[in-house]
Every structure is written in structure tokens, then in C-alpha cells.
Length: 254
Image (cartoon, rainbow, N blue to C red):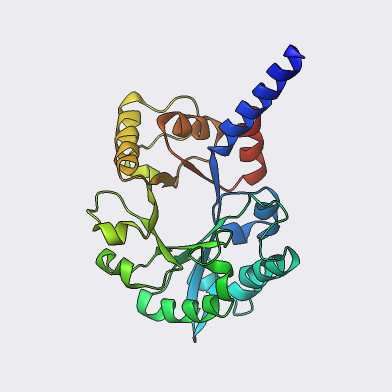
């Protein structure tokens, strides 16, 4: 019996440790299994870039890659809506799981937000956590309005924050995390150890985010196991990756 109890405690502790590592599916739309791979692996956050084209939200990485058939509705919103209908008000049959949909605005805020808002609000409460605790949270990155305006938007609108900004209290409530370019702190390529001087710079910005009670994410970081491990050891909360399965498996067995 004692051995069984020890085994159960070990499993619970291991699971709790992994649960603290949040996986961000970077540019999810370029995955061979758009949305479904990230969803099946229960990632914390899914990212899609959008361009406003004639009032429509088109998912693409650059202007030259725009295909007007690749709408945000088709690739993400309709799929999420179907899951809520299937699971009777939840996105998953796992009652504890939901995720964040991070939308990176590639065209101007003034042009993109009205087109985006029109689509999101037609789905009702499934994207509004102030109405439904299991809603998919919307976080906007890329071209954003002035941070002093964050608190003026509808309750479903949240933002990806930036370091070294003195957010007003009301606006900070709309910030879900602080994100920055890894290359601003280190030129390390992802093999071996991050140089000590770079670690100090990374740790400092992570601690600044934590003082605001916000998670920290680095984009553009080397997508390697060495980097994932060291970022988590330094205190980063969200791992930005294109390697969803490999990253999840790594932390499950770490």
C-alpha cells in the first residue's frame, strides 16, 4: 500500500510539473494539421496571423502568401464553434481544458479590428471568458492600439504585452502575458548552454514580468530542447514552438 501511495504521489507531482509549462503553437496555420494538432495535444495557446482584406480576416504569414479562401473563420473560428456545440458549452470533453487563441494583426489596427470584431462577436460567448469560464480567450498581438486604450475595448479583448511599459492598472488587467524577441537578449543558437551574461539579461526581464503577475514568453528563441529547458529553468512561463509534439513529450518525460 505504501509503495502504491508513493507511486501516486510521484505521478501527481510529475503531472503538476508539466502543467506549469505552457506550450504556444507558433504560427499554427503552417502546421500540416492546422488547429487539430495543437488542440489534440492540449496546448496553452494557438497563434494565427491575419491580414484585413476587403473587410475579411485572412490567415497568412506575409502579403505574398495571402489566399482569400484561407479565412480565420474557416481555419479556426468555425472549428472552435463546432467543438463548443459538440461538447455542450465547452471546447473539449476534458472539462479542465481550454486555450487561448492569439491573433497577430499584420495590417493596421484601425483596419483589422473592425473586421475581426465582426467575426468574433457573431459566435456569442464562446470567445468571452467574462461570460463563460471555459471560453477560448482572445489575445491580440502585432499591430495594437495605444496601451492606454486597452481598457476601453469589449470584455473579450485581451492583449499581448510588451516589456518596459508602465501600464495603467485598468489597462494591465487586459494584458495576459509579456512577450519579447529572444534575439534582443541573446544571439545563442540553441545548442549547449546559454551564455551566463545572456541568462542574466533573460532572467531580469522574466522577473519584471512576474512582478506584474504576468507570464513571460520569448518569440524567436531557438526551437531546441536545450533552449526549452533553460528558458523554463530561468522562469519563463510559455514556450514558443513549431514542434508541438516533441515539446510536449520532452516536458512530460523531463
